[in-house]
Length: 171
Length: 240
Figure 1 (cartoon, chains in turn orange, green):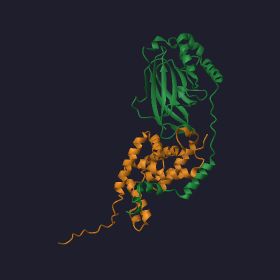
Figure 2 (cartoon, chains in turn green, yellow):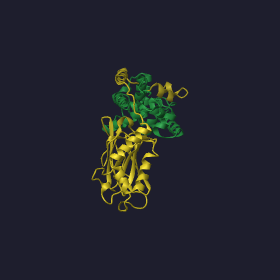
Figure 3 (spheres, helix red, strand yellow):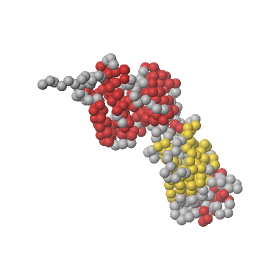
Figure 4 (tube, rainbow over the protein chains, first blue to last red):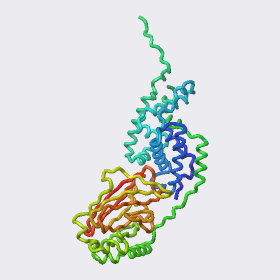
């Protein structure tokens, strides 16, 4: 039987990225990732490669862990303290901005983004996991990205944190 | 806003390249934990047909199968043929009240007795009604226990199995399972149970926890075939 956990390091990274996109980067994501692998160890023998690869299998477990964690306690939704934004390097700032933008998405969109860009699953794998058609997943992803873009708009210059007063030109 | 949204499809690239990464400590800890537990070999094997038949015949004899067959030879023979012939999964036959003073010996309780049967297929209802929410198994060690009850309104031969989401039968540990009273015997994919007294029957099925994938829906399938050959099916969902 193929061992789904034969090479755990890349799997940990993908599961963590998925979880962090769902609930935010940090200790909670680490806890959920750990719990996911604990359960995976418990159910290791039940892995069936004909039903999907190890990543899909682990993400299925991670989804359940997130749901269970949410039932036990309120998972954080606003994980980015306001003051952290000040003085950050440009790329870090973009990262924060994407994280903030993700928080504005509804649960379904965020789930899709996390599966696609966190866990790096294909649309087909996501479709199998969510029991949807591949086409439906592609369309939903496209829309989720479009909604994300409206929050992280490429064309707009980034607004100042303190708005400058608008002064009308004189006659 | 700088940089990442000015190239081709930068938002997607940014989402991929800037995906959150776990700390090295977490990766090392999980790697060590995984390394501690080597995978167990799944040594489950199906019994060869000859051994299977011998086991079933022994089980049937042990519960007084010959006696109950005598009360209605023709129907019982048909029912037993249904147990052994068509099914690929192996199971043993349990008979309600299978003791020396059991129901099958009481006048009027032979399989096919008119007082305990009606025309048409058997009526089957689950505990809580058909709209009751899915059950949740209780995990005890390496076993997942699913507990419910169902009501049957006439004598019938029951075929009880648990299906995964693709409709495949999964193994039931009979020793820890109960249909009314406790069951005995090796693990089976289908449990055969002969109901002589129509009633509400408590059901507890023991399943290997390793086969229950969290977040997945499973179904307990109860197929009832009455002495006239009418059949009905009850499905009880549960979520692992």
